[in-house]
Figure (tube, rainbow, N blue to C red):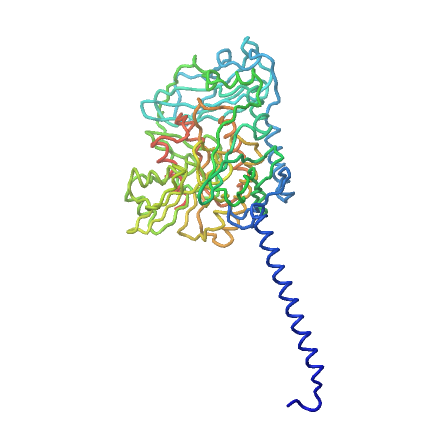
Length: 558
């Protein structure tokens, strides 16, 4: 029985209205769900879920527009200043005939301070006069020369310093560090006309290297064109590090999200920015030609002098111009500081005891971990599952459980040049790699930048180097006792593609790296000086040089 104040007819109307409302809401919900499902089905291939994983902190997008730069940044001004600083030093020369270029055979070299005998510590001065193929004196400088003295009997050698007088003449100065019969070598690596052409070609664009990205799903894969620039109307995946301004792009394959990019390779494209005459200048037959054939060895004696050895240990925060040292009986002897020898197993194990050693960069620092694990066998590789699509580029990890030694080599990401495919799933720009390291007094970082940057415009290298410097600055704020060593570029083969990989490109980057890290408490290992002195024209220096590079690294880190 209802209370007297309740109207039964009104209650019936309210109940009926509520049911109608519920039915209406349910209908609307069903329609919304069906609409959403249909939209997902027809748009699943267009959807991309942004995530911070691929290439580390990248922004993965696929707009159907030509890729642009990440946008103006504070570092752009510094990049332009450094670029212009180098640009002013490069000769601006063009020729129509190779006979107008500097000829090693026609050029001349004379000793300006000849003696019947020299004493240890004396200076030996050689004047080089550049002539063209017709024997005419050159009126301008800019030739890329390489100078060294050496004594095969004692496995001694040293680089020389070269002064460009800007008038077609050069003064080469050698310090005579050891006694014996000393040979003189001055090589014409590139005439100034080739230097000018290489500089223009390097900075003209990205067309010399072709990148191919491998996009993978659970059952299949597809390859797609990638690079720093893409001239295409197709949909583009943009892999951008917004903080550091690093950017890389791939053409987006149909039915694959941008995050499906897993592997990459590169090849030299059938392309050149050089004219036919300029290509002749960098032909192997015109590379590394001797100018000093007519010079006879000089005799150096002790003259009652004791060779003074530096007292202070080589330490962080300083570097020196070429020559920074010399080889004697295959041992590198710095002239400004004292280097310890880290060649014996026991000494290496004692030094590395309880330490983490992070090796970052290209295969020239990969030599460290291979030497420790494969030659000296003081550490064992961690037996991890290998990626079937990559070979030497995979991350290497080696440990010594008894001594608590941890060593890791990891490649830097773009630009990385390799004909075989390599994984990028765990890749990161070097600056990001450094950001992930906690650091501490038992942490050592040895890094190198250069060889893989040679084929690309210089601004790519400058930006990466500045980003690495900023990462090291951040590391020193949170962990100032971490040791950071920069292994500088070494010379490499003369029979390679010079337009892309010439040592001239490496020398420019060598100069810039010192400028960018100037004043920082980091160590420098002058791989260029050592490789020129030793005349090891291979990308991976031989054991005699490698052991000295490692010893110099660990002396500064000790």
